[in-house]
Length: 290
Image (cartoon, rainbow, N blue to C red):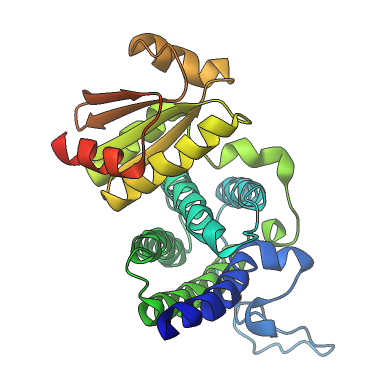
């Protein structure tokens, strides 16, 4: 009972802090940690002729791409509803995991700038580590391992602070101060490419065809995502109301209703199809059997 009480007290406080982290908290122009950004020199009224020349900046084209990626990610991030009850936290963290997995490939696709390559590589490592830790947190919910979860949340908070500093050093500070909702589509790959990148990373991927707004589909979305993450597989959700995104895939694999789950292994081999009602246990078992 004591551990359950501690879970109720610590998780909401920790997750409310996490929700305000990443990019959302910086839309008001706050620097990480409440202080000055270490990568930005202070401006003085008496220029010092002996001051070393500033380090070369990344090319404008690459920085513009990074700004678009960052702004698109933030716009998607802000669409995730804040949890209202303890039962909501698992689902919300699952949405964070799905988003991080979806934006990783598009960041890698940017490549590396001719200057500040080390900083860009550090940002890539930060993104990879954040995605992995978010998955770890999701999977530890089942064990109610509060101390371990809290430790990971502290590390995620440190990664958030580091990520903001790296973005500023790379010249992509604008995305931290504005919502940039108009470029949301730039952060996430289209479903076929995303499925491919998930297969490369995880070996297996759960693809859900769903209709947004349908309460039945919402439950199945939560269960399909949870099953995929618990089985350490990739997860890609396909909105059937978006014809360009869903039409080709639905036709190729004869998807006639929503929700429908398809499970693929490397080589785009279709190993399982689940239509209608299911729960996370069924998804986990189907992934194991694939």
